[in-house]
Image (cartoon, rainbow, N blue to C red; front, side):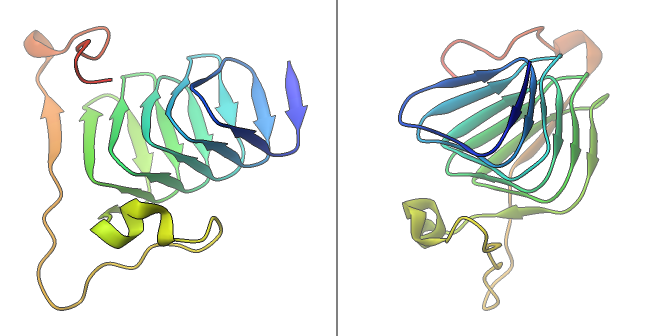
Length: 138
């Protein structure tokens, strides 16, 4: 299935087809292995198994699995990247104002300039890598 246009949802979302437009989900979003988004993704937390070609803006966590491909910048409070996934972009920490949705949908968050920003990025070794994120995580 191919959707031409933007998607807005007040609940959870799962994308298993192609979306040519922005995706804005107020809760958790999963991009399945067969899923592809050609546009900006905005959500509370994100599990990526498929492809995103556009910036990602998440209030909480981004979790990528080995089949994930993201061509765009990631702005989130926490990012967990499988070592076999591909990220072509910048990973930046969202400050508390940006997490409170003060960032406009098409405006990229800017890092804080007054202090160093540390974003937790976890690269999981093979022997510890789960097929799915822990239940209490996503």
